[in-house]
Length: 74
Image (cartoon, one colour):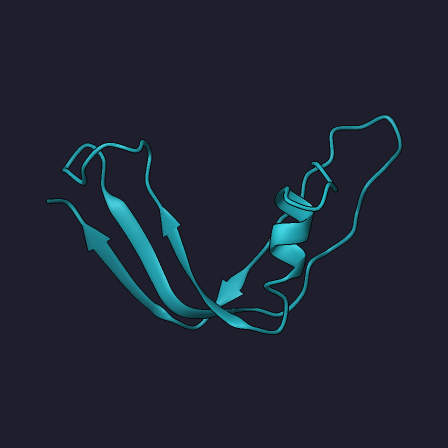
């Protein structure tokens, strides 16, 4: 995980204690049955866990709560 100002950690850190919209899509193409757009609107990120070890791949498991889920396939 990168800790630079415009990278993953900084982006996620700014979302803690706020509501946001999360959009997940397998590729950048148009939404379709094989490339669905998944959206969680108005969800909340309560914390950003810090469980990193020197010399290991840095990962973070985050959980967004609440919000309204929708799926676009066209």
